[in-house]
Amino acid sequence: MDTGQKIEVLGRSAQYDLCGDACGTQASRARDDLGRWIYPAVLPDGKRINLLKILLTNACENDCYYCANRASRNFRRLSFTPEELAYAFDQMHRKGLVRGLFLSSGVCNAGRTMDRMIATVELVRRRYAFPGYVHLKILPGATFAHVERAVQLANRVSVNLEAPNPERLARIAPPKDFTAHLLQPLHWANHLIEEGKGKRVSVSQTTQFVVGASDETDRELLSTTARLYREVGLARVYFSAFQPIVDTPLEDHPPTPPLREHRLYQSDFLFRKYGFTFEDLIFDDSGNLPSEADPKLMWAQAHPECFPVEVNRASREELLRVPGIGPRSASRILKLRGKGKFCELSDLHKVGAVAKRAASFILLDGKRSPCQLGLWDSASACHP
Ligand code: SF4
Image 1 (cartoon, rainbow, N blue to C red):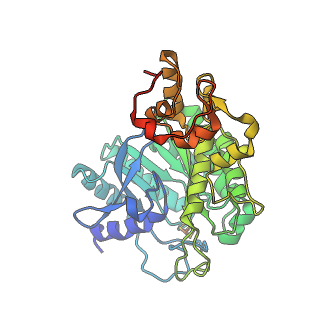
Image 2: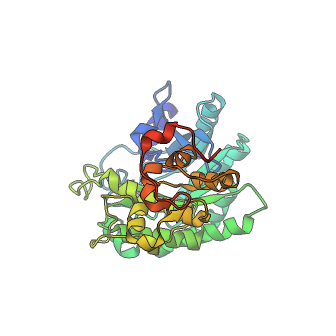
Image 3: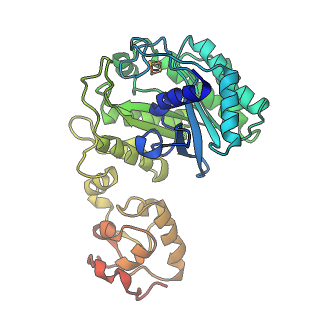
């Protein structure tokens, strides 16, 4: 099989690893002129680039119940040598097809596979002098030396936890040890990243959960997510809704509805951008986020004592608790307040807030606002 065919097969096999705005989904990837998968991704600095997202090999000695590459599935296994993959990436980069690399792999002896992944990135960096974005997956069971080298070479590293705790992981990936194989590398990477801050290009780390595969609850997922943000300085957590794969032990397990994944991302966003804590989230009796409303609206409805908020006097933290007001609109409100009062819903609409949503939670210059959307096109009476 030639290199182009390997890129096609091992690129398709990498679709389950997430690395940008839902970039593992079919809708957000595209084939290039030669039929190879290219993945658009959003970098930590907000830039969008195309990544070559690929596995070093789709052979694996593990038998995780949800995984297309598990050892017990019967299909043709392929592998790159580090030289082959580094050269192929360089060629695609020179042609302008990709501007970054995301490298993951099945596990054929964790130590040896990590050695070969690291050798690939060393060739990309040294022989081909590629200075751009590299996301390197750290495999379960990697040693401290592997993590150290990965942090030196990559812009982003990640360890897939897959499940929120040891009990849940044991139900879907029995050979993996949650603490020793997965949490430990995250702690090492965090320590190394903190130590290297200011000395080299900034490095970040992420993780990923398979949502619904182990019958875990949203409470478990988000409790672990909040802890990881605090304890290992994660930049992002990715939630991948479980989809059954034929010829796996979970082939008859129901798929996870996209709305569940969406609510988890909304909660994650509240942690990262709105100052919410795990304790702020509202769960139903089964330990899951209610599907009927987003988690911020649920919190606001459960805390009538915090409303209404006077838009002309509220702090940034108070504004961010109002449904319909996000970080950007809160910043604009604070900036424009010095130039005049917010008196109408149309004033809020102009700064990007979802004014209709905010209406029942705010006061505008001391008054509750009628929700008159037809007024939005008219000029504000008292705001510039
Ligand atoms: S270790 Fe990774 S590639 Fe191997 S079966 Fe488990 S999830 Fe799949």
